[in-house]
Image (tube, rainbow, N blue to C red; front, side):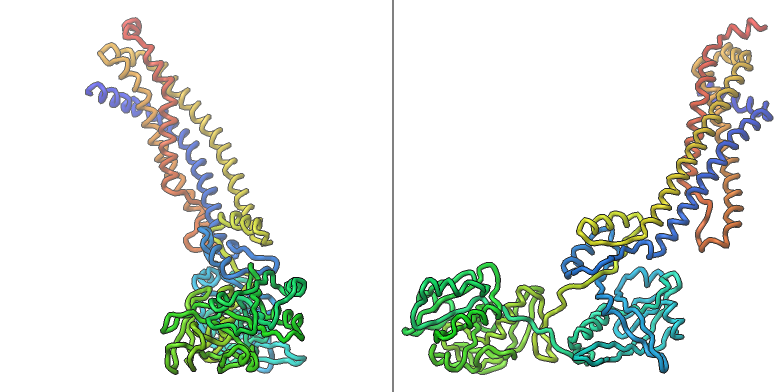
Length: 595
């Protein structure tokens, strides 16, 4: 161990003794390292700044559809789960997202854009997410109408109905104005619900919550099947004729017990019954009308039906029918409602209940739906009996999402599809993957791929230049270090042989040039890093006016500097191996011969 310390001391004293030569070699190595650090710092800082600007600007992370498609709620739910998606929200048709803003005696037309929580375009451009009856404007929109935060925006929605123009108005509070980076178009951002209400109003659908007039999107009726009761059976030709062109694909002659199992009451002795169904689908009112035309003149009783599970105080199946008074009498029934109509009544007949108002519920496509019902009498059969319109509406709720509007006391269809979307990925590196996924789904989209690709090309180009310069510099540094250390060993053969003569082993002398190479490498790194930081500071100060807060045009992470230091030390030690090997060839006798 003592000899090891002696060799290290001798190596350091030797460098100090020839300090001019040592300084020249250290500066030569530093002259190779510092430009490489500076070049890498410029590459990293420039690319990082450009990427930072792209990442901070949501416009470059946006992917927009170029055509109108139908996107259902399930598509949005499933696609939003992708790990690279940062924000996804439906949009309405372009023609339905145009509103008029009243300014004094004039009107301005703006685009209405939906938004919701975590919208990066709003949050990263100085905005606040609007809530009900609130909005956010782009800077262009605010300047065009001369409003500011806290002002009220009078919005008018127009539609054409029966050859005349109609409109409704709403008042929105402006809670923030986006900066210029959010876009140069005049746009108004509001909650998705308001945007959908605007589109629905333009399609002549009433919006009760806003007192906007119009029609109601009532659910269509869906039947399980249609019972046809006749005094005599149909011949095969007539039976087959009921299938052709009616949407029915199955007709079955029912035994009386089967009829009773389906309906809950008994078929009169003078009638026979057929059950007509579409095995693969629901039966719609169009099929009922088509069958009615085919059975004209046959004195047939046609009874569309629905058998459904409804959550009632008493557990029992519910059978829905609608019959004229005449047909009720023929079947021995006495119902408080008549034939199939457009208005839904919430009555029910139960065999073991008194007249009372109850709350029923139904497990539809998207969960439980509660609605009121009135028990108005006793059921004539073993099942509860309800109006066909009610059960046919609930039957539709198994295929389409429906809701019960308590204010109007009616069932309404919810929105089925959207025509577009606003989508932002998490980083610019995720754009291409999501772009490819959407393209494979047949959705034509556009993204800022060209700008992103230019940054990547610049990054690759600077990387190649850096490594080209680095390889040339490293090779030159290695050659200079090898030559210098080898020449040092040649010059100091006498001194090294004396070290061998006084008892220092061949292995210990081997480390003499390695210690010197290591020391010079450490000094070179210190000088090179100091020079890099000084030059980087000057460069960043020169370009400070063109950069945002926290951005640097020349910057290297600490990990890069540590890697550069380790690489320099490794290269220096490897360069010293030839000179170190040369020391092992020096014999102690050479010192005696020189004496």
